Image (cartoon, rainbow, N blue to C red; front, side, top):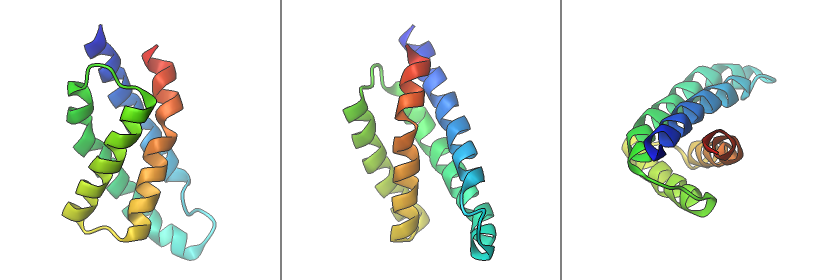
Length: 105
């Protein structure tokens, strides 16, 4: 049962991330240029964390936020993201918590 919840969490996280990214930066010319790159980075991040999320049995909000912070920093180092890109990635990932919790219940 816990495995099914984690699978739902992982799938929901990826879907949410892609949806959020699609709405980013739509208002400016620079935003339109950045949109494709940001969308790819968020998708890569969720692909990076998905196996790790699946291994976690129970995940509370605090643990999720700590996990996101650590995973995003590691991902940022590997992908050489800017501080702003890292910040956006963390905010977006943390914003998915309520949705993930709702679908895991």
